[in-house]
Image (cartoon, rainbow, N blue to C red; front, top):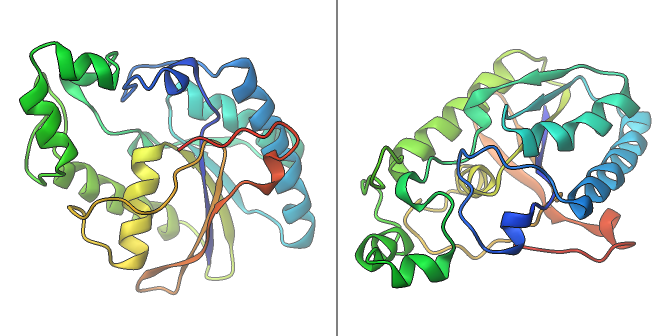
Amino acid sequence: MEIVLIRHGVTAWNQQRRFQGQIDTPLSEEGHQQAMLTARHLAGLHHAQPIAAIYASDLRRAWSTAEPIARLLGLPILKQSLLRERHYGIFEGKTHDELEHEGLQADYQRWRSREPDFELPQGGESLRAFFDRAHRALQTLVAGHQPGDRIVAVTHGGFLDCAYRIASDVDMSAQRQHPLHNASLNRMAFDGKRFSLIEWGFVDHLDSIDSRRD
């Protein structure tokens, strides 16, 4: 079966390089445009091979990205909280620059070094806990479908990073080399035992607004 993972459209906080985590931020106007272009592209794929279901994180920026897709495809959105972004604890609401200048430099460097068991202060998830949740989410999604199905899941950048690593056997602590564009299409296969990559970081459908962000 095939899973099409989509990162939510851009938000003002994305543009400010501000950690969102599980804060429920809305899409920007550009993000809504990205969502509509993504929906139109998926409608073409749906015509060639029907999409069986649409899942989305229950955070507003993901849900709002899924709405035009669901409308054009005539399918309901199935909320799945396991698709949420990582909980970034004390980092949430702060920019990268602020973290380097507000007495949080040590924590920020530990996050950047991708220590698997470092728990972000104030209730944040460790990388390992987040990675395990992402793997569990993928297993949960495929469990409800047949081998030939194609499903869509609208999620977040951090989740996409985990999914890429799961499908390509890249260690969770390795520095990232793959893109995580807003409103990108990222296609994975599941053969009943393991996940693999089909296509990653597709954003050609966004060319009319030329908005690629990692």
